[in-house]
Amino acid sequence: MPELPEVELAARSLRRWAGDRTLVAVEAEPTRVLRPAGPAALRPLVGARLGEVRRIGKNLLLGFEGARGPVGAWSHLGMTGKWLRRAPGEPPPRHSRLRLRLDDGATLHYVDQRLFGRFRMVPHARFDEVPELAALGPDPLEQGIDGRRLADMLARTSRPVKVALLDQALLPGVGNIYACEALFRARIDPRRPARSLARAEVDRLARAVLASMRASLRQLEQRRGDVTYVEEGAPNPFAVYDRAGERCPRCGRAKIERVALGGRGTFFCPRCPR
DNA sequence: ACCCGTGTTCGCTG
DNA sequence: TCAGCGAACACGGG
Image (cartoon, rainbow, N blue to C red):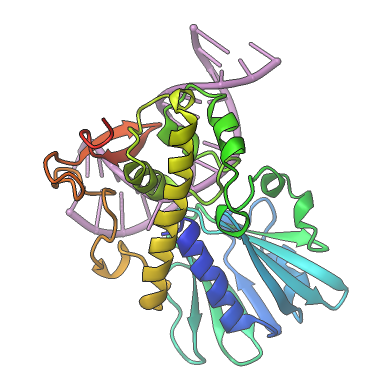
């Protein structure tokens, strides 16, 4: 479910549901989501009030005010993670791995079928001391994209540009879907070595990344959902992702192809980039 | 039965 | 030494 636009929606939902609210209880299953600690590590959250919710790429940074000062929590949704709100008395969703009980009676569930997500305490809410977070590039939506920096980083690798784009040190929040969508928009063949891109192409790609993410955000807002197309059988909203064999929506002449790059399904029009 | 999957990390290799 | 690659993680759907 989650790349940057979906995680941004999750951040907004958490603010709306829990901003300024106090946690009256915290429960968690002993899953790998909590690694390397366990459920006991969540104790400092009990009685804490949620302040700021930040997002960097696909990472949610929750800032709490606890009895003994600031406490932070880092939430990453992995492949199938999501936050859901349940009113008092409602049954818990399937695969609920972590529950935050709020002082208004509602419960926030962290739901994660495949358990690739994470929820980790960050002492004193010092997020910049978490190595995985410090390694991220600047968030493209919040900070914009520095074309020169992106060009420099792409020039340093011979991997396919599609694979290079998934490196969260470049444009954090770009995942398999938006890498495909942005390259299609920019008319760049995803198989090309990253270092072969001309500067003008890098700039086109930067604009395309922002455009495809903003387009999805608008759609997600309108459905006022925390839901993407895979769940609930919603129609595929993307131009090329998961559309192998369909006619290209731009040129109308070639069919969308699927190849594996970096072990991931990659969808593109073989004709448009030329 | 087999393959695939919106993410990340780890270990091996050349 | 290190970029690059594939496997692994865990579960469900086609």
